[in-house]
Image (cartoon, rainbow, N blue to C red; front, side, top):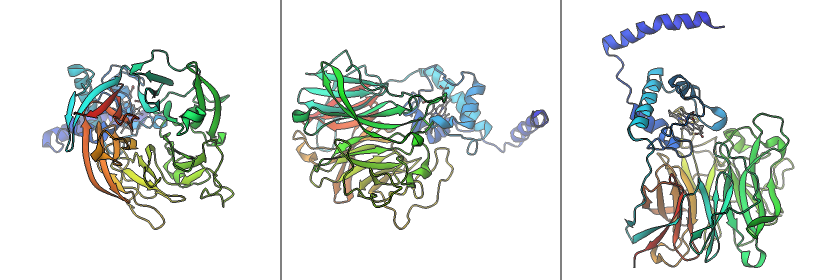
Length: 472
Ligand code: HEC
């Protein structure tokens, strides 16, 4: 079809190379720097994976030859959230990055960080112990009581830890999830009145049933159920988006579940890769939703006045929230969301407000191109804090235990890319202090105060949960 174009390209190529070489106009691309700037956010600083797969494990889902790899970088894999670098990297840059990936693969293979035993922070020495090990992409943790924890694994398993022992058999009959891209089984949340009612809540990526598409559309779904004889029973669907809003993309699903003191359940749906839809209140994506624990819509939800709006909406303009927590004193909702490159945000979410994505943002596209120059607009909220560069926020909890007295009501923030847990001191709607309390043991997917007052950190690469306590 394009044979004439092709032949021109081929005949000019040696000339260009000669030109560049002869006059030394183009410096050699700095591949490690390019990699850190453009790729590390998703594929991990050590190339061994994170939000996206490892590039040094020898598995090439989309073609193993250099040519395929270069093509995937140049044109991206849009439905999975792999950006295209055509506009920001030259062919030489891409070639150099592929070489760098190959060298890293040869030299060290998969890097598995080891977990430190002891960590020093400003206020405490932390003891670090492994609470559960050999998990596959654990995503969230919550507690049924002082002796029992539930952990989700993204491929679709709900695991139980009883008296410190991970049960080998996952809970049977949990919902069928779509485990592709960033999707799968995400949050687990235990009802605040679990002792009386036994309800457990799950959020997951749900593929449209009976779809004729080769890649069935998917969306975030929230259900509750009970566990009897290690089996998921009595399931009720609390939130299912209309079928026409399901999308073929496989990223930005959200999703966390939290409860405020007034019986509301909050969850967030990510923008599903369609940023502009975060401003459209007829659609579920890019929003925070508020329902009652049985799925009913509260009579004071902010968008009930408009017939076309989704009734469960609570706020707009949220790109991909993967951290949610309720302030222990005020009952307010706090969230962390993944921004694009350089735009991770901490927000205090108020009813009916618009948090700006993708009309305003501090971030840029992953390939370095500009989304918008706007960071402020009337009628749109500013984040309490934003991280530039992005730390890849994931998992959020207020510390509410007694073991770390100095950390009462401080905010624990997990970070995938930076492999960190940060501790933020918030006063009203300001962050007055931030410190890193744990780092380098793996990508942090979730953080949670346990019923025993310990801090539980859910790690990916390696897939495990560690328990942090202060040394006596
Ligand atoms: C916003 C996240 C993101 C960024 C940034 C990103 N990727 Fe990806 N990449 C993905 C996703 C998602 C996939 C699909 C497979 C998966 O889940 O890993 C992917 C797939 C790939 C593949 C195909 C892997 C295979 O198994 O065949 C290659 C190669 C790749 N990326 C290289 C890169 C390089 C090089 C960069 C930087 C120039 C980069 N990516 C930046 C998300 C990202």
